[in-house]
Image (tube, rainbow, N blue to C red; front, side, top):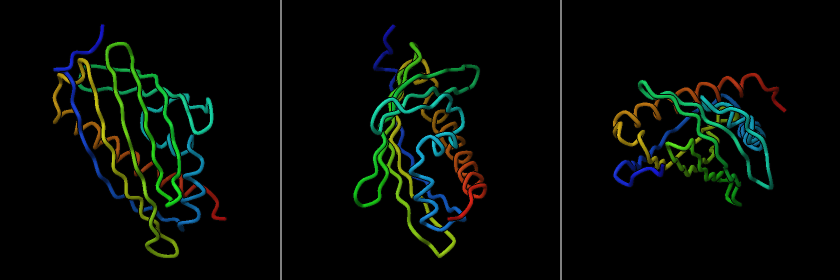
Length: 159
């Protein structure tokens, strides 16, 4: 069954994450796309399938509902250092797509800021739950991502 257009929701997020790592260490970490993706709660089985292209599954629980969206992501670093990702996924009941931009900025010799902006589109029964619930869940996932990213950067040796 194809999701109804009336059950489509779009949400934009912007978040700034400060990590305790020099900018070169952060850039090196961001080149490991799988490592960065595993900082996002619910990402499973991510693997490269082509140049700059990855497959993964996102398991998410929203209220009483659980979803396991399988999909693909395309990730590139632009010449200005901005990371761009476009991803789509589906579990047969729900379709989702996201575009994400992340920029790294040096705050000090030991601190880097990650400025992230994303646009999320969901369609299907999950859209009927409403934008406020989807926004809260996505915000919670981004907060957990920030914590996991900080933890992952601390556990990596500084080059």
